[in-house]
Length: 324
Image (cartoon, rainbow, N blue to C red; front, top):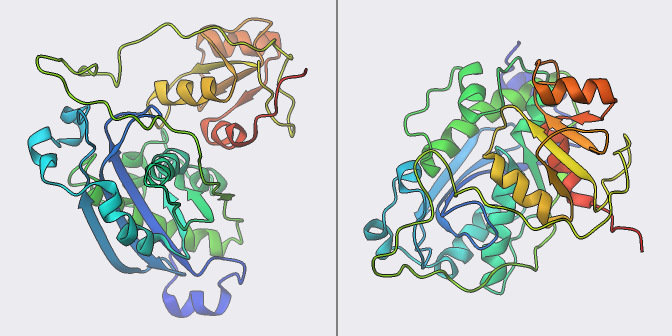
């Protein structure tokens, strides 16, 4: 792949490309709607992807810090950190007028938007760009959709995985060649609209004496039985049409983010999480449709539609209401 220098790109950069980007990473207490941000980092980039500056902060989540073995931030470390409302203005200044760029941008955007909603404000973000979706647009030969794979493809060295500042740095360094490749090949950037969120669980979850965190090593949360979907199954997903509440969605194989997050978002949208594939399954989500798993083989035999994770997270933005 040809990497362009700034003199080359100045002459051919598509006029429709944004003039600035905010590469963001947040670490959180978990993946549910009531979880909180514990650290945040922003790398501001110009239109060609050059770093202008960077910023990092800890955030006191006012609750159990969650999976400490992942992000390394204990209650003692976070006790003296600022609350989100205290850093909201500076965070907003870093985002203002720029496209929010993140690896699985839907997750980072929703966590940020909910924090601003709790603070009775809104983040000044109009568009976001998911680097998973951009890698798809560029057909990068990645073994999976994890940040470490994208970093390895571009020769970027990770120093502290799940540290917000280092993850944002890694993503910024990988985003620049991705952006140049897209400009060189006139590839459309997968920009999506950012809509302020108005729903969140506002009550903090205080730690209790003798209480053991609901998280355990190797998983984000204990598995749980989900309530039945309240909507009837409208049938199979049809390409180029939106998802509809009540559709049965199954997942198979590796995903770039924790499976339970995708399932949470699915349930919140009014869809049914199917544990297996049958003739009633509306859609199978997998990043490896050619793998010989039982779900992909059944999907193939039943003619069940299949989409990858990036496409599915975009479909989740606009799920139509159930009939009636």
